[in-house]
Image (tube, rainbow, N blue to C red):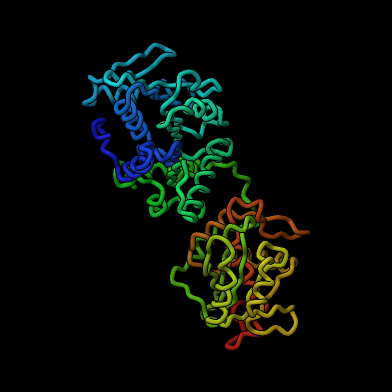
Length: 462
């Protein structure tokens, strides 16, 4: 990369160090497949060019093939970027180019290796054995035809590698979206087992709950920021691009078709309810909720402050559900809450028996005691959702602008329940469990006000 005029940034060096790691026993690459998902303008193209040039320089008779969105795009990048970069580098006398249409190649003289381009068709990559295949701009590939063409061509190559790289795509980018999901699963399995798979996956992206206009968000997903990209330039892109396109290009999020705004969710005023210094008051109520896929769970707290405004906060959010019951028991012992709420019929309802077995007393609406486990009925959930939305509109609610809760509010949608509505898990674009938990915590605090010791909670709010 240095000889091509692009000294590697830390993130590029990291990817290449890992992706090209050799097995000390066999002497071949540890990873036969490498996936790279990174926002636009981070230096991906220069890195891929260096990867391919390294391969044709280092080994004899290598066949390297590059593919982009279309063959025309691959030809344009080949001529305008690859050859142009090589021609002004210190390597310019070590190769020759062949630009015959349909037979374009960079031929390395000393190794007799070749770097060519291919099209996005079922026949791409067919022919001679392939040593390195690079599928760039993977968001444009709606199926696995290129992978199915290239992979078999590497079957007899001990050092064969297939690379794919892309920024975020759309809901039509079926192949890329599947590859990203598979890559995340491989990483999770690696952390759990310590066993390294035959594929390496690298991804920089900003989850939906992080604000697009916050430089702290940009720093989580733009590895070239501070090197070849500045915050001022990113800010200018934010100002001129549609939010969905900015998210796809620079936050590496998948762009999906957005339904019309839900009029039941007053998200426009949410930012005005932020109080970063807000703290819970004397009496608190907790609530729990679990994502529909049961991959995350949330605990929320609600409390009325001395000034009469109601404070809501996400106490904890973690993967899985095994941590939830011990956490609730511990919080109950520390805070002596007015109540702990969970919605009956929700994904979190599966934990009711465990909560009772851990010492929480499940009671109905009659004769409530402090610390009871309140199982919220369906009609009460509807009431709680409407009250929460009213509190947002009326400004009687404050929050800390926590990413899980703010993200849930921004992505929430509602479902009709008779003439009213409730939060819609499956229809929302994000995990709404933090919002559901906060809604239930507020409801539990107000409906169980008669067990609060120090003051009348309802009178403070209303």
